[in-house]
Length: 112
Image (cartoon, rainbow, N blue to C red; front, side, top):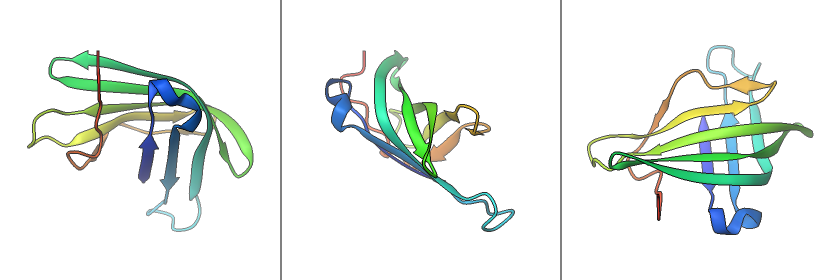
């Protein structure tokens, strides 16, 4: 999976988020790309020294619109991976478990 997100609570209209899924167990069978077309909410929550960012909105897969919620965790410790806690495209896709991404992939500024 490849996650690309550039989201900001103060600039929802220009925020972007996408997910590219490639099924390695059944090559070519279940591949898809999801692209958000409306981000309606970005919230940041401090958890200890880390920050959890939740993004809600709607997006398209093959021209069909679905609501989604993505949850990202920015880990402060330099030895710890950041991670995508969950990514749910309602009625289409539900990520099973957290997916680690390289440290520094998720940067939460001004987390409350």
